[in-house]
Length: 267
Image (tube, rainbow, N blue to C red; front, side):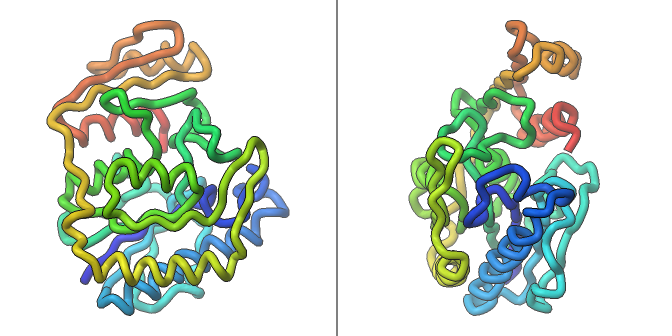
């Protein structure tokens, strides 16, 4: 079994302030360690369920957060950013049997996390077919375009609610809950225990039920915080500005949306 893991840091247990996610800040190292531990726990559970090859995308900020020496030896770690439109799912393709998302977080505009955002801090919100979009949804659709089911998502409670509303067969682990600018988090060891058990359970289940249907068409709405960003990005082929802050884009091919998103975010 070949498994893909995409890992972020804002949904790791304990993370509450942006300083804790920034490689240049003194608070960062503690949460880098926990990010690595939660990813390693998912790898351990996946291996016990029969995974022989595990690819991990370090998908936070610089893409240089996870401590490779603390991962199992049956893993390959993708660090940095290639510039490919798959972004947080770089190197994902039809050869994978399942995908997991570790340390993901609430979408832009959500009150469920003090670190809520979607891809960058530029957006007030992003919608796909009138559904407010999170990084989970964007990359779950990317996985679906490769016929790969997302079987486990870990992060904050607001994200878990979103995932369950989209497909209740996907296992979720809520490691914290956001309240205003605060978080209530479970113990780091408890988080790794739950992720280990859930990764194993998810892969031992009927993973085909976790595949999210890919819509036939995609209508994208991006509402920017700055009118200048909306103006600039409206010049992408097929994009259209509908008010001072909002750009829309429509396509029948999901990869074309990912290409547009790459242009808009630069990630």
